[in-house]
Each structure stands twice: as C-alpha cells, then as structure tokens.
Image 1: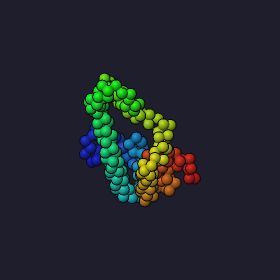
Image 2 (image 1 turned 30 degrees about the vertical axis):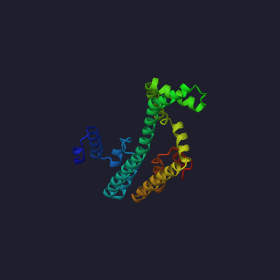
Image 3 (image 1 turned 90 degrees about the horizontal axis):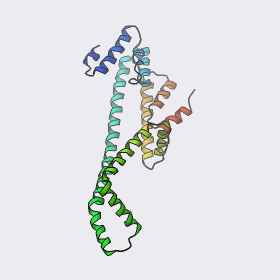
Image 4 (image 1 turned 120 degrees about the horizontal axis):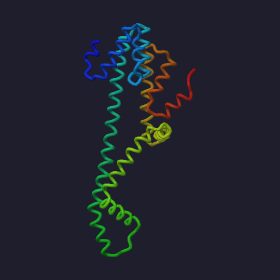
Amino acid sequence: MAVAEQCEKPRLKRMLMSVRSKVVEGYTLADGLSEFPHVFDDLYRAMVAAGEKSGHLDQVLNRLADYTEQRQHMRSQITQAMVYPIILVVFAIGIVSVLLGTVVPKILKTFEKTKQVLPWTTEWVMAGSHFVQNYWFISLIAITAIAIGIKHALKQPKIRFWWDERVLHMPGIGKVARGINTARFARTLSILSSSSVPLLEGMRISGDVLINEKLKRRLQMHPIE
C-alpha cells in the first residue's frame, strides 16, 4: 500500500493497487503480478513464487531489485556505445552532403571548361552533386523513410531472425553479441537458481531473456526435458 501511494505515475499506481487487491483477496503475490504479464515477465513471477514457497520473499525481492538495476545499467551502456558510431555516421553524411553541394560544383566547373572526357567515377560525383543541390529535400525524406522502414522491418519475426543470424557472423560485432547474450543467460539463471526456482524452469526463462532471436530459437529447438 505504501509503495502504491508513493508512486507518482497514475498508471503504475493503479497497477500496484490492483496487485494489492489480489493479495488481500487471498491470492499470492505471484498471482497478482501475473495479471500484468507485459510488466512482470516470467522471470519476476517465477522468482516471486519461489520466494513465497521458500519463505524468503524479502531476499528474492532484493535480488530482483539488484537485477533490474544491473539490466538498466547494461542497457544504458549499450545505448551509449551505439550513440558514438551513430554520431559519426550522421557527421560523415553531413560532410559528404556539404562537399557535394558546395565544394564539388566549383571543382567540376574547372573540368567542364577544359571539355575533357571525364572518368566514370567523376561522372558519378557530378551526378551526386547535382542531385544534392537540386533534390536535397527528397534525399532527406528518402533517408528518413529508409530508417523508418528498417525499424518496422526488424519487428517482423522472419526478418528479425535473419538479421540476428547475420549479426552473429559479423567480424567483431558477432563476438560482442554472443558475449552479451551469454552474460544475460548466465546472470538470469544464477539469480533464478539462488532464488530456489527449479533448474529446468530457470533455463527456460533464462532463454527467453536473450535479445538475439537466433540464439533464442536455438535454445527453444533443443528443450531440456
């Protein structure tokens, strides 16, 4: 009750009050959390259920709090690691656009005056410069549309699986991706095991927290019975 009253977000407050009502009615805390699977996934519910059965719910909740903080910290690190290359790409695109729109046209005028036969690479540069000068707005719309299209495409299961499979084979990136997923699996399984969650159930839940669909599918294809 005290946690719900201290919550500043109305939606979260209503959710906590609903969980409290379930507990007051005689249901377990795990049952109350199961009413909101989009917020409390299998990991949370299994740990809470195990904590209630073993009588160590307070310790389990502390582990969950630490786990949530660690996961948020890891997400923050991943986001920060992605920001730098994104900035570099945007900066590079900006520089190329400025060069094609301002500097290159001045240089190409010199070639045009000499009336020399230009190599195909120079012809491509001229075409790119002309396009940027006259259709820069279309270019901006096209880039934005491509970015949005890629984002939506990766939400499709088949495309996401194909992409995650390619990521695992990328030099450098694949090793990092495997390391991140292995760490998530091991950390989650460790927390579940220390909270008295059965091993088989713990491995199933730990597999669900993987962010690479290829690795997740591989675990699902080889269930442990």
